[in-house]
Length: 250
Ligand code: NAP
Image (cartoon, rainbow, N blue to C red; front, side, top):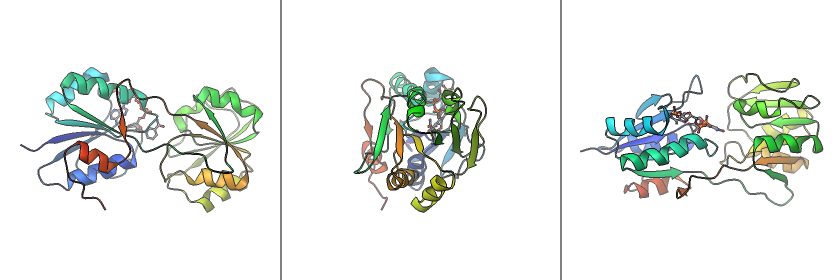
C-alpha cells in the first residue's frame, strides 16, 4: 500500500519536500497549512487548511487518514504546532521527522544583540535607535505597541492589524529579497536599527548583509527550543533519508 506522509507546512522547505514526495509513484503526500495567508503559494500533492484542534485533533486526523509518517516542516518559531506534532505522533504511534533550516550565524562586522523573545527585543530597542525596521511578522507587533517614541517600518506579506505601535509605516512584500533591495529600503527609510527573528534561510538573509554593510545594530530574537526529546534535521535530503526514501533532488 502507498505510504501516506503528512507535512506540517508553511515554509519553503515544506513546499520542496511536498514536490519531491508528490513526484514519487506510490507515495501519497498531504501538506497542512494553518490558513494564516489568504493566498498561499502552490503546493504539490494534497493540501488541507486550518488547525486540527490541538494535539488530540492532530492524532485523530493521522489515524483517520491512515498517515504513516509526520514531517514537521513548520517555521522555527511555530512552537505550538511543533509541540502538538510531537504529542500527536507519539499518541498515534507514528514516526515524526522535524525539519528545521539552520539558524543564522553572525559574521565579522555584525553588531548583533541576541534576545530570547519579542518582549526582550522591545526592551532593547530604545537604547539602540529611533527608526526601526521590524521584520518579525505582522502577528508579533503587539510586543512593540507601547513604544510610542519610535518610528517603525514594518514589512509583512499581508497588512498588519492592531495592536501595533502608533508610528508605523507598512511595506507589503514577500521575499526573497536581495542585498541591493535591502540597502535601498534601509537607506530610504533612514533606518538605524533592525529587528528580526532567527528564521534562517536564504530568502530573507540579505537584510543582515545590508545591516552589516551599513554598520547597523540588529536585534535577533532567538528560536524557541524544540520539545524535550525531539531533534531536528536541517534539510529535505535528511528528511527523505529518515523516511527511508532515496533523495532525487539535485
Ligand atoms: P503556532 O503558534 O505554532 O500554531 C498555532 C496553531 O495554529 C496551532 O496550534 C495549530 O492549531 C495551527 N497551526 C499552525 N501550523 C499549522 C499547520 N501547518 N497546519 C495546521 N494547523 C497549524 O504557529 P504560528 O507561529 O501561528 O504559524 C502558523 C503557520 O505559519 C505555521 O504553519 C508556520 O509554518 C507558518 N509560518 C510561521 C512563521 C512564524 O514566524 N511563526 C513564519 C512563517 C510561516 P490547532 O492547535 O488547532 O491544530
